[in-house]
View 1 (spheres, rainbow, N blue to C red):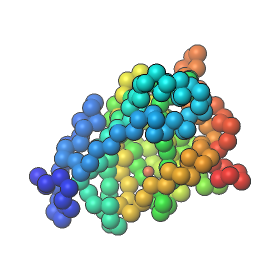
View 2: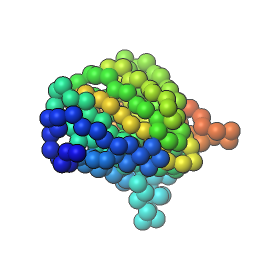
View 3: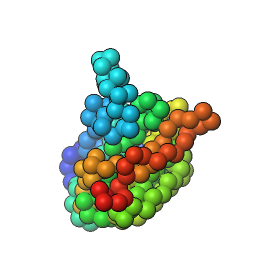
Length: 200
Ligand SMILES: [Fe+2]
């Protein structure tokens, strides 16, 4: 078993916890709280109201596999999105483009969610992410994952070592659709602005 933080020059095996999202060994962990991404939600007042209570909930967290961020490698990461909403909009990841347009695939491990994807010219797609589902993100498509269930959404993502993460393009203009808790279940609604069009 390799020492975490070292570049694996040799084959190795890592173990996934399908319910917990744990990854052993891992190079790093990450935690994203609401205060770091409050602007991602459509209802800014609802986000401020949560934070004003002194609560700063963990929206998502995860583990990075012990692989160097270098060309030729495949990075992999588990993510656990907690259940919850800001206003009626479900907890979700910030979403990003890759700096270098390159594909990624997701494996659903626990819980239920939706992946929002949008191409650089504004084409939109959504795919359901549930245990055993593999969702393919083509090169050039921004992607965001939304927890539409009442339990943590756990998934594995695999992407190129030199893909890089461009969060700024999504922060500027968001996705064209948002996923809300509706009376009869999750509802996809048009956002006020999206990645497509002049602002994209
Ligand atoms: Fe990605």
